[in-house]
Amino acid sequence: MDARLQPRSLQIISDSKQRENAMPLLCELSKGTEFGHYKEEQWKFVLLAGDITLLVVSDGTATERFLGCLLRVGFGEEDAGYGMMLVSPAARGLGIAKTLLATAMKLKPSQGLHILGMCSELGAPMYKKMGYKSVAS
Image (cartoon, rainbow, N blue to C red; front, side, top):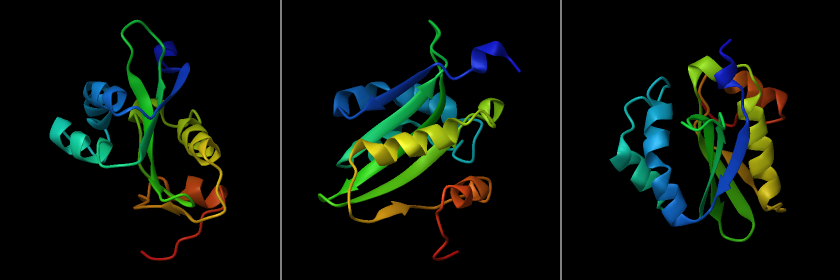
């Protein structure tokens, strides 16, 4: 495995301007994933839609690239949703997705619902290990 693909930095981005600045790196990350069709206009729609926190793991190099991302969407004071979990195919198996989800759930602990939306078949085993249950398919 390429040493540059080792996760080195976890960033939590709540500020809308910082989320907007992350769009080029998110577009690059999504290219090799199931969301390869996502361009800047789709990311802008998702990232600027409300109470959004973007979590990213990067390689920490001078030519930084994102290895994985997750969006946390706040629904009022109690509930949160999680989605747009993307991990670069070259960085899969390094625990990036687990780190992102575990970190997101600790950001604003709540007594309400934690909803994970649109889990892909690729991610289903990890979510199941973390205690999530499927309610529809």
